[in-house]
Length: 145
Image 1 (spheres, one colour):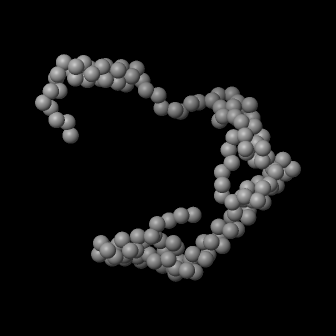
Image 2: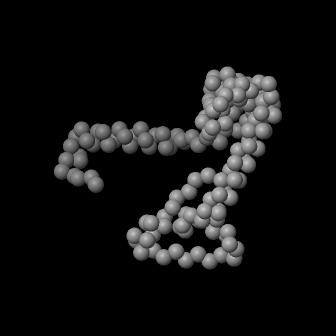
Image 3: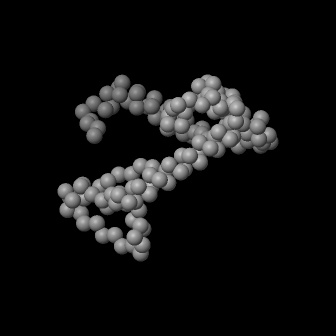
């Protein structure tokens, strides 16, 4: 959980905060208001509970495969072979592999945007044309800003 505090900046700029709310905590951790210590403590307590729930779920889900270390649940990331060594993952793979082999999806659609022929041609011709114009001095005396 992260946020910003703009109260000092607003004060320097002469910006007045006008917050209307119906409950004592409707402005919970509002970045444009000073920190309310009781709200901060409540957020920290919630984060602690969520963290413990996460740890419990990982331990239950990974079972004996998990090779827990003192810093495993510290917020660090474990990827690749290291995550396998720690028992956090079973193997390396890709989204397509999981879709095909684990979920057994029959139709996999790739929604990655691709350039069409016109865009590729425009880039090639555009770059080539600009290079040729530069070689022949077309841009001589022109200042681009």
